[in-house]
Image (cartoon, rainbow, N blue to C red; front, side, top):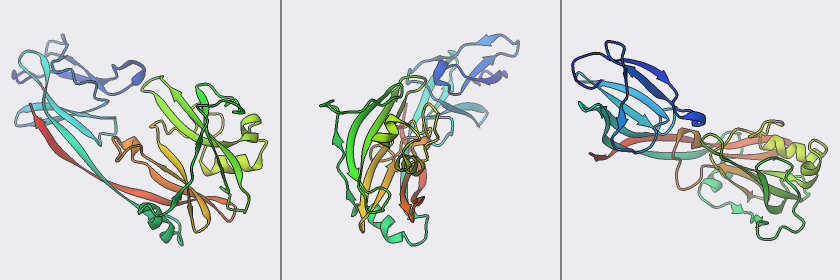
Length: 271
């Protein structure tokens, strides 16, 4: 691995504590442990792959285990230290398309920014009348009125936000009716809303989306839809390649749009 003409033995492991991630334990041909110090200190690569090339082995570092977003190519030098050879950028493009027949115009309107976005009133500044979230690491941070079931009846919804520092951290937002917050499972509208958001009850992090995904309610042709998408201008990891739209259609939670993603790597710099 270090170009000295001798083989080293590598064993895949995880050495990043509660954050998980991929790492390697190495030993020389005499089975003596090797410690490769990171000479450039650019932070952990949660996903790693070895690349044999012209008699050498290079280490590819990715943002996460899925190995979709390439960060850097490194090599072990004769000094026994891990050096960054070059860095990469991952360019991403997406297209929102209809997944349920008959909603092509709605998905096109959302993709082009022509669907109206409903304002969520912040409750962080004034805690008066704000219900208790009833869950650890969770706060009620916003409120809006919307006919989310598309049945001609507006309902007050509260936005709840989970923020946990465990592992790599987890940030989630979701919506509840006031009755569902007070007594989970007691409110039919609350149950419908949970189904729309695909929230399995009893799990600590709900639907497992820990990437701080952005959620907003949209109106198109008099119907309400919930959009869930990556934060910022573009995804920065495979787990954040999320953009979909859900709505209640004829009383049933329905996914009406979902995005297709394509990505490519570009060389950013050479050390």
